[in-house]
Image (cartoon, rainbow, N blue to C red):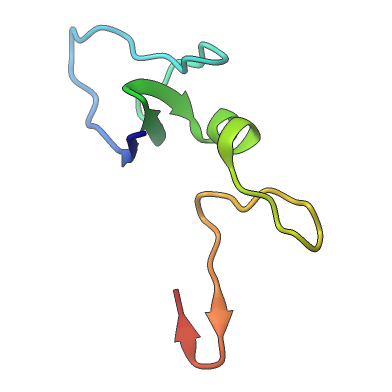
Length: 72
């Protein structure tokens, strides 16, 4: 399984890139490639994000972990 977070510049005359799940136009937006299919951040998190074992909420793409003075 391949997962890549992608930010691409807008190119005049290029074909429109859309989310594989919801068809959102991804031009100018962050998106993630999974198995060579583009997903908007919301759809990726809804479909594939791991869940916190304690609170059951999705661990999103911008999630930060702190442990003492360490930050991952």
